[in-house]
View (cartoon, helix red, strand yellow):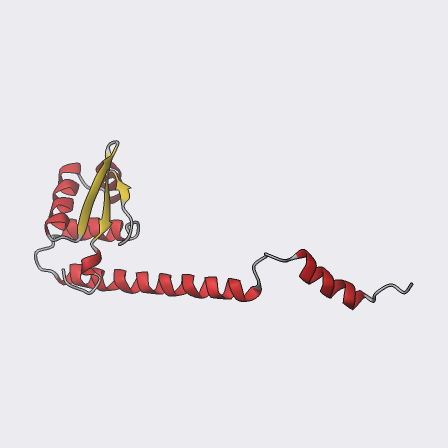
Amino acid sequence: MAEPDAGTQLSSHRTAGLRGTPTLSDYRTSNLTTLRTEATMLHHHDVISRAVSTDREITLEALRVFTYLSRRLHFDRSVPVLQSELADALGMQRPNVNRAIKLLETKQILLRESKLGRAITFRLNPGLEGGRA
């Protein structure tokens, strides 16, 4: 009995052993979706950053806190924030960080979600994605 050639063995191995395994087109679709999501998030962050930086009522301290937090916060999920960590990272005093956060909350830029130990969880206001601050 003749053995199948190497090409036949390879093609049957590709189909038989890889059923249920993602194909290259699955990865392309997944990567495209991820890139679109990242591009959308960058656009939203850009829009809200522009709106915050042009608001005359936002203090320099609040702008510094927002700039630092905007790299960590999301529109769709909350993230825990320690004011002491912010104060250390920004070289600010805690009362000034607290005041800046309160201003950002008053302007509805940051949404306070809940408390997690000593940290308060915040997220960016999805209503500001369109550019109103």
